[in-house]
Amino acid sequence: MEKIDWSTLSFGYTKTHYNVRCYYKDGQWSALEVSDSEMLNIHMGSTCLHYGQEAFEGLKAFRGKDDKIRLFRCEENAQRMIDTADYIMMQAPSVELFTEAIVKVVELNKEFVPPYESGASLYIRPFLIGVGAQIGVSPAKEYMFVVFVSPVGPYFKEGFKPTKVMLEPYFDRAAPNGTGHIKVGGNYAAGMRSGEIAHQKGYSTAIFLDSKEKKYIDECGPANFFGIKDGTYVTPFSHTILPSITNNSLMEIAKDMGLKVERRLIPVEELSTFEEAGACGTAAVISPIGQIDDLENNVSIQFGNPEVAGEWCTKLYNRLRAIQYGDEADKFGWVKVLED
Ligand code: PLP
Ligand code: COI
Image (cartoon, rainbow, N blue to C red):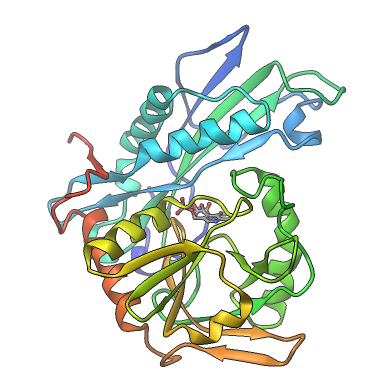
């Protein structure tokens, strides 16, 4: 294995030793297979290629000070993949099979779990695709479930420094009664144009508005949005928003630290009343938002010091990381420690 400079890792792909795979056919899942190939061999008529029958997940493994490897809320990802698959008529692996695959792929690639001091982690990407010879628009009869891993650093280049985001004035990521609440590839295809426009204009990502009324805050790129004011953690509630496992955890932590928690519609006009704002997700962890620009209306909203993360963002970030890396007791029961 080539030496990896853990401290300079960004959120990118690094080749590891193995991935794991299994196949659904004739009503049942095969046993897990270990592969050292980075390629898939699938039929050109596969529904994942034509009709978007694709579901994915993202979770992380962390190496603690004690050198032990910890998985964060793996069963939640398993359940979300089941929910996603159910909605787009796919067969999903059970929670048990999903968990077995995750544990196996991490164990096979132990040396790619970054050291404790580096602050990096091992990103785990499970995905599920409809495969097999087909042309008609109907659910596939066969499925492939694959999990690969890659050591990663921060998703947004600023890391834990405030980032600037652009309010997307026009394009929608998901329809009001569509697929925004599940993790299908199509949502990311729909959001890619806005993401690229935001990047070209110098922003780290785009914040979407609700697609029905264009009045409320929706997703913040590949992450949930939250704002903090008057001792309250506020995060949007909507059918078009992915139920983020990180956000759910932060809501618990916020309550535990004495903040009130509100999950509700957030009108765009309310943004300027927040003392702090952030984007949260597995990849993003917490990315403090320093500024949101509404270029259509020439409005720029700033949150605190643009150079330094706010007090609550910092406290929430530290607490979440302490649980994930095992620095703090796992009082919520979120962590699975792998055997040596
Ligand atoms: N929203 C979107 C659109 C995402 O892609 C993600 C990433 O998974 C999240 C939110 C955050 O979800 P989680 O915290 O479960 O990773
Ligand atoms: C994650 O946070 O795990 C995600 O899935 C975001 C990803 C699209 C980069």
